[in-house]
Every structure is written in structure tokens, then in C-alpha cells.
Image (cartoon, rainbow, N blue to C red):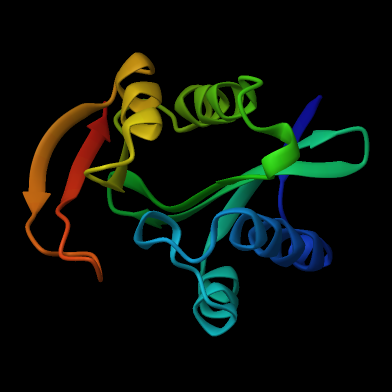
Length: 145
């Protein structure tokens, strides 16, 4: 397992990973990333990936904003889920973010497994966006100092 920054050559693998998630679960409100939206996000965000051998197992996209990294997308390939890879990847980001910088993210209120992971890693719930998702669900806002 290795973690590295993602660049343009990784975009095809990132798209394939998101397509695998959609193929397994459909386009759920908790993970709604149609191709055009994903393309726009990959064009403007930075990212870290976690690899098993040469295969991209998961990735996180984020934007640098004053005082924080705002996480926009967290994705794990279905064949690599429930192996602790995202815990390692986000833990890496927590260590890499530097003093005085926070991590921010939002999560669908019904995404219990993601919420448990973020809270385990030290993220604190600090806000809500009611009716944020297409299904009318609330987005929960988390930060990690």
C-alpha cells in the first residue's frame, strides 16, 4: 500500500473507480458524481490516492482555502472497501496538512460508516445544511483541527 499525490495521468483510474462505485450502488445521493461533475472537480481540485500495487484503491480530492483543506470527494473502489484504506489515507492527510490548517468536509446524514470513520479520526460535527442533497437529506459539516 502506498499513498501519493494524484496528477493528470491518474484521472482515468479515478473515473474508473467512481464508475465502479456507481455500478455497484447506483447514483445514490450520498455519492452523486455524474461524469461532467466529476470532470469539473478533478480539473480544479488536488488529490491524494492510496494504491494497492499499481491499482488505485481509493482517493480524496480537496481544495486549499485559507487555513484549511476542504475535502470534496472521498471514494474507495468497492473491491477495496472495509479494509481500513480510507482511514490510512485520511490519517495521512491529517498528518500532512500542517500546523494551523484544518480539514473540512460534509457528509450525507445517512452515511453512518463515513460519519463513524471521520469521528474516529478526530473530526467534529460543527454545522448542518438542511435539505442539501437531492433526496432532501441534510449535509453534516465536519472539521478536524
